[in-house]
Length: 126
Length: 290
Ligand SMILES: Nc1ncnc2c1ncn2[C@@H]1O[C@H](COP(=O)(O)OP(=O)(O)O)[C@@H](O)[C@H]1O
Ligand SMILES: [Mg+2]
Image (cartoon, each protein chain N blue to C red):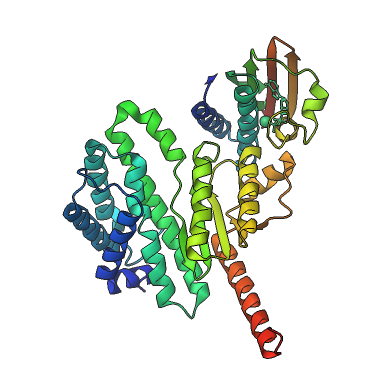
């Protein structure tokens, strides 16, 4: 799914909610995943100059999960530890998006290269 | 037993009609060639009549039942014809939302001595009118399938008007997303209404907001701060358990903000708060210090 405008953010949240519901995530789990998606999608838009997200349903034995990968070809993150720190923002935000998203999911992975772009992957298991 | 909302609708049909039309015409509803005044009056009167019937008995917050069939059909016709006339879904929904203030005013007047009852009934009326308003949006969308996407998004950014719940208490019920440029407008409208009504307490109800992320939280905190600067207090209601948990994980600190799970809870808090200041002022006066 493209992330190019504020309206796309609405669509991303809707899609994540639908997929989470299909996976029979509880209301709390759904809300956590949708909120994490909202944070990461907005970062892709605001800091990564737009990009896209890939949604993936996972099945490992009996357990099911949802994986979201946010990718952009923006400026990249020079210091990932700093970006993850609660309260750090280079824009006018609360600086809680990355750290918050990490706390809302089971697996969190971030790859970023200055000048090339950023990819954040999150997974939540049922 | 007939419902209290039904009793009000039945007792004040012409007053409600006049007040409703007033809200719409002063509240910036389009009054140009799109909609003739007489036609609007007729539609309002018919809707009030059908709503009176529909609300006589039963569960008022379920509009899918048989008792609401006629009211739904009327709204369906209305939405379709308005969408053809070029009204946006938001404008059509505003038609329904504008009935809140007159209905709330009447409930407040009628049960003035029973704030608890007023709180309960206002809550029911809010849910009922929100659902009917959103229903018109759904119909609108069905009627114009080719632009469905855009309109869905529009619906998601709807916000209902600021309503006065009680003397010095206003409420802003929010529906949909809070991350667009629209947020700014919504917040400004609230501050404006606080000035106009001399409100001392503003309730921001986020029951209809599906996702509270850090940007939403930031907007809410800014609004609370701005409200305080104007000398009023702000309560946020409608924080459901799943939202509360998520906010905690995000690390957002709402410690300085008064929050309640329901509008009724927020309203009760507001009443207590106002009573306290009133009695404090009275005792000051009584002791000759004021
Ligand atoms: N996709 C991205 N590309 C470049 N920088 C990013 C990206 N995502 C996050 N950042 C950086 O990390 C910082 C922290 O992000 P976040 O925790 O979401 O806080 P906020 O969005 O409030 O600034 C951002 O201010 C920005 O500098
Ligand atoms: Mg962010």
